[in-house]
Length: 121
Image (cartoon, rainbow, N blue to C red; front, side):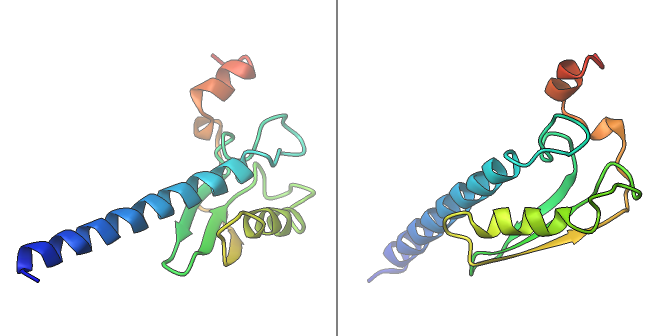
């Protein structure tokens, strides 16, 4: 096999892996969009509560998320619900959700679509 054909095989494998990774990421985001904030009728992804979704090569997922307020009554239980939802996504090996408070959530985290839905635009 020539160096050129070896490179082509590697590129094809990398593209397939990238495509699978992107598809898994989309399935995870779809799952996050099924979880709604208990106080605001908007899903946690579009509400801007999800700061980071990382997927490693073994399909282990790490999510950093926040809540609208540190005094939120579901602060103790909500991350576990999110973790279970991500773990249930086809192709996910494991998931860990970390609740973070920095940076604090603000209304600026809302998508324009959500701002319009809530009458803020």
